[in-house]
Length: 335
Image 1 (cartoon, rainbow, N blue to C red):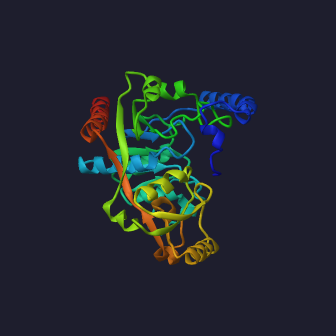
Image 2: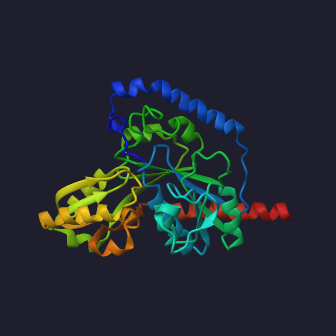
């Protein structure tokens, strides 16, 4: 996946955006057709979908990881299901420790560190396999726009720095669908960062909003005062670079790769040479780290942290109620 064009996140309309608008209409028409011809199937266990309306970079995977931890803490046995974006494997498959990002995708590897994770194009099949292997609920990382599977509860994640960009649908803007259409199917919104008044006006009053922030671990204080060569292959690397500066790091070089970039030996050797010339250390994201060949990971530092919810108890209560209500309804159907 290439980096998002800058005009996507410019508040004022641009010539680029306007010229691509006819293609946005075609994209929206294709989405309508896809939804019309798709047959929605249900899962045997409740599905909590965590997605977004924009293309990449909103923070859905960190949120999925945290929700997984909360459910495990509450006594549930969640499994993750994901498409395994950019991975070669398309059949429903359990992610194992020996899998590589090129086979199952980088996000799936991160998810599998928390709970069993299934990847594949057929998410309904993945949900059945999860149930057969002990899952009592599903966290679906992405797939909010997937019309083939019924979700019991849908959460969208919004990064307050980008919000909805220029509010146009791809390729004229960053939206996967119109804001209204997306919010019509949304049960809860998680906003990472400060919620603006403009954003509050867009989100309907009946949809609960949970504030969240990305909390940097204290161990990252080692970067304070250090010269850093920072690199990342994520949708919005600028936020990562700024986080390093917030930790007191002195960035001598910032290197951006395409989103989900699989690092080669030559990439790492080139980065190491660059860092050696400036007498700096190499730092990347946790998501990038899993895409680096294992033999070179000892050369790389990571900026570690996790999502923290302002009202964690409320979020846990809402999600567990969804799961319990689903269990009760399924029990009544059996009787």
